[in-house]
Length: 285
Image 1 (cartoon, rainbow, N blue to C red):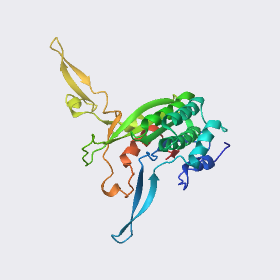
Image 2 (spheres, one colour; image 1 turned 90 degrees about the horizontal axis):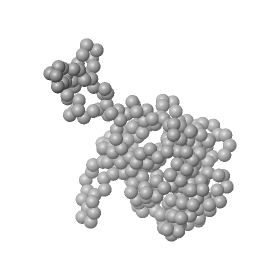
Image 3 (cartoon, helix red, strand yellow; image 1 turned 60 degrees about the vertical axis):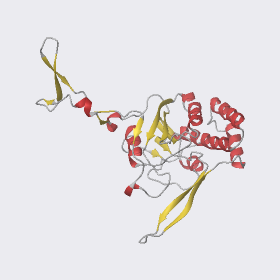
Image 4 (tube, rainbow, N blue to C red; image 1 turned 120 degrees about the vertical axis):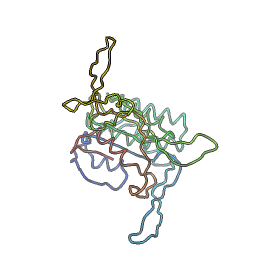
């Protein structure tokens, strides 16, 4: 692909596939997070606030409806012919197989588009880089297969299926209410950045309450009586624990909301950034 300068603190306006090809060099990115369309078959509107007034006007932000059109056909052909060597044998066979199983329609067009972009993300990630793909159950099972074919087939590793659980109003009478998204977490290679100390969450009070004494050095401990009737000190080993793979983070509300319908909470992104990058490194969103 040729050498490209690392461009930090920049916002690119345009098709992200073309922007990556044009501006992002090989192995220049430490962490990538994407929150792509979910193939929801919906149109999303942006709410714009007129400065100094209470008037609001809406403009269409994007249409999350896919069709097997010229763009999908060109993308499919690009994957099959693999002229730049971005696609593995597994990913090529997978996209051919999925097109047969699903027919060449909306979902196939969506998966072709995602395969092209995930392949470019693999290219731009450093060997120690991490990739988080935010999706929902609409197509998460297919996206996991695509990621396996592009990442794991070349020495990468599937690390977690993270469940982002959020509360919210709503009542369904035809099925259970959906209140979670999925984040697929992969690394480009086995040794990857993971700053576990940066994301520790407080221990359960039921666990810490037993450590109700403090020594001269400020360390918390519990005084435990053994079978012989003697007491010994059991020190609390850590102040927090690494979060599990179910993240109970509230949905956007209050001043944080910008009116964009698919906006995600800062706390969600903060955890990802702290866990999988160091200060001063390059993150691609």
